[in-house]
Image (cartoon, rainbow, N blue to C red):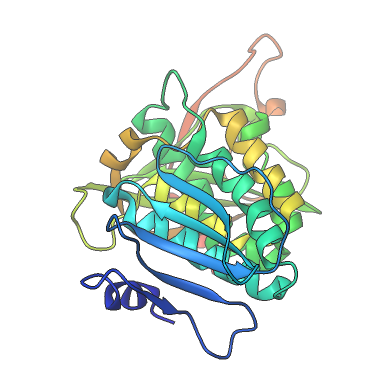
Length: 306
């Protein structure tokens, strides 16, 4: 379903289009009388209080036919792409819930989106922190959610908990390094990052700075919203949100100015033969150490990461 096209059909006339006649839930998208992109769910439900944010206005009203109409309206067109991700997520949740529970489930889902879009931090993460976070989230989205399932993948994300590895699960681990496209080396910032009796994976994510208008550019706001849209269970979503809070991230307009092109990734299998410095290799008087690994020196450890 091309949701953007559905919206565009009602833009000039400020009307709404039903998502799909085969859907069990009555969901409409279009533009309201104020010209705002809006998604509306109309089903039987009970009235309850629901709060808006500075980006999305939410309303729950009783219609003349006795049904409830739950609407979400975008207040700033600069966030259209994020709003489309949000709408797709709400539509999926409602369809899974069925007509009787659609509005209740949409409101519950909104609680977690509101946490992301409603909080305001006094400070924002710096660009290098954001670049590192994007690398971790790209691997979560592209590899680990499908490989391990959403619950185990989200629980495995240890970076926000100041773990030595970015992801630890079962008998393996993943350490993610975000670098520029042409980087020849990666920095290992502590002895513990590659220290383990278990075999693991060093993943190099290549990101290049770009402008906000570049095609296929990504930023942390958009990427986080996409991952929220992929996590269907509310408990898993709560864990994910808590970990974002631990990092110090919440949605902020300033992050939209830091955009990157994802230029690919390489994964290296870390076993006993992989070149690294272990604690056993240094004198006990040395509390910590940092070092770099030349990527052309570990070509033989390259692997296909599924």
